[in-house]
Image (tube, rainbow, N blue to C red; front, side, top):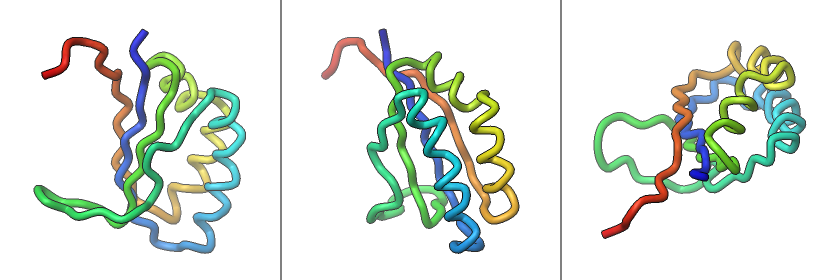
Length: 100
């Protein structure tokens, strides 16, 4: 079964208040087995437009990634995030096929 991923680019407008979102997302992320692969580390924008924070989160499946996003626990976290940040978020299915 292919894994699922959240790929997010984020601009945080109020770092202090954003901490409440980070605390609130811990519960649903733990519940749905989220694993951070990238979380705001160094980056270089080589094409297109970028935001100051980049996040990649892995789930055991695409379905789990969607369930986490649609959960009531994560909805509470979203309510804390929306007023203090701008985000682009895609939930994508991983690829298990042949590689070059």
